[in-house]
Image (cartoon, rainbow, N blue to C red; front, side):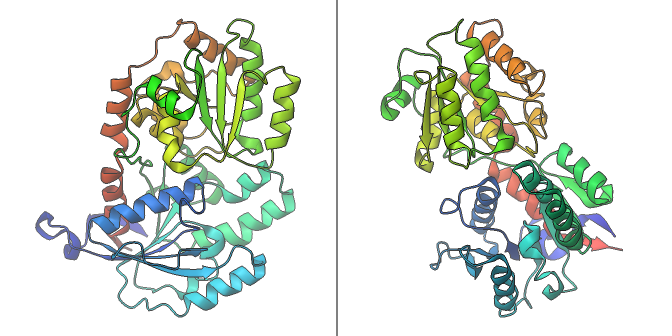
Length: 399
């Protein structure tokens, strides 16, 4: 199958947009369930509902109340169930859904798509948003190789072969989808992630943002928001900080996020003599995240693997704050057209330290607050991104 570039007349006749009924399968509901995939589905759903589409969102631990007149939730299972109970519950509860008036199907997670894939209407094209190689990501966080193999073979590949087209957030993940899962290139469409430019904006000066957060006013501050697991590179960032501390002794790093490595990272910071240079913020309330970006001199994303897009990059830029990132996944695709000097030479702690040092010592000029904001607005505004996704999932499929 190949996708036609012309959408159905029902939704685009004479360039007029008609409301559609879209069935979406995600995970949890942001911010109750934090995570990049959850935030993506949350923002996409809100944007589509605002444009008058009717969204039926299925997932795990979804709210019991209707939050928007155009968004209907069906909670398929609970996260505290065993995996087998969850999968059985997903299938049983999905069977109760009336799918006769659905115009589009949009799936976001292979594990919970597997029990329902054969229940979906055969006449409606299935679009899968590939957020990353799930099996390999679990391996990077400690899952054994046999489990990874079975997840890829029995879950991911079984779901993907029944989907008509795919959306990835970067060329890097499009390549993985094609090479590792043998998905034909003509079925893959790259649409970057987006940022809510109304919520993430430079509406406070760095001084005022620091004051509200209780942060230092007289120290260079870098910020990172990460799930504290192995592949995100916070351990490398701590080592990098210890390398540049002799040159810049008052540097201060704020780390937002939780995860199974938090205690180990705190111990590492102490061993490196960084207790006065680092603050582990733990869970940062979502309303404080734009403030944190604005309070920092720049944001750092030191990922070591599997960063399909880099949501924190566009959030920070939308707040007017430059970003340093490693050359991993889709992140360079965001920064290269804007400020390639802010991408480190490699994922090593030494190269991260070199880049941070160059910026803090003024050897590399930082983009202005205004240019960061404008780049994010021009390229990653969720209003525009959601319409690109909408057009793709409603596109006619022809054999």
